[in-house]
Image 1: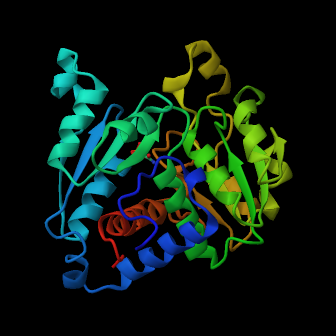
Image 2: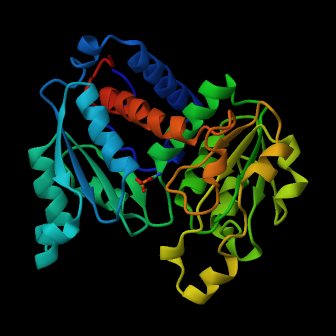
Length: 309
Ligand code: CP
C-alpha cells in the first residue's frame, strides 16, 4: 500500500523527505504519461472543494488536476452561495460534502480548520490553505519547481522575501526545506518577521539568517522566493500602508541576480514583482503555477489508489 492512500494532507510537517520525493517522482510520472493512461488514475472518483476564502490557483489547479486524471469535481467556491450563509456549521458542511465525494480540499480563514475537518470527514481532507498557518500543497509545488528547475534542492542558497509573518506559504515552505541541506535567508520588514512560535519549531530543522536588506544577498541566491504583503490579514490598515511596497523585484534587481537563479512566487502578486521581468529566463512563477496542476494530480492519484499508479 502506498503511504498516501486515504491519508489527510494537513501539514507539510507530516511529510518526511521520502514522502516528498515520492510525490515528486509521481509528478514526473504524471507529466510523462499519455493522456489516456492519466485518465485511468481517478476514473469514477470525485473531488470536493470547499473554499471559505478566495482562490484562483489552488481551487482551479485541483479541479484541473482531477480532470487530468479522469475524475470529476464538485464543490463550493464561494460560501455565500451555500447553506453556510444560513448558518450551517463547518462540521455539518464537511460531513455532508464528504458523503458526496472521495476526497475533499478545504480552504479556511482559521488555523486548525483542516485538522478539525479531518476529524469529522469520512473521506481524506487536503488543506488548501488554513489561516496564516499552512498551505502544504503549495509547498509541495514550490519544492517540486525548485527541484525541476535546479535539478537538486540540497546545496542551494534560497532567499525568501516579503511578508514572512502572515504568509502561510512561507511556513509550509520552510518546514519542507527542513528536509534538505540548504542555506536560507529570510528578508522582510521588521514588522513582518517570521512569527516567533513557528521560528522555534523551524529552527529545530533548519538554520537561517534574518535581514531587512535584500541587497545583502541578492547576488548570491540560487532561488528568490517572493511573497505578497497579505493586506487582508493586517488588523490595522495603517500598519499595512507602512510596509506596502517594501520590496519590488524589477529590472534593476534582476541585473544583480545570478544568471541561473530562479525567481518564484506563490501568486497572486500585487506590486512585488514587476511585469517587466516576466519574460526574463529567471522568472519561473508561471511555470510554478502550472506545476501545481501536476503535483496535485500526483497527490490525488496517490490518495485515491491503494497501490499508487
Ligand atoms: N498560491 C495560491 O494559493 O493562490 P490562490 O490564492 O489563487 O489559490
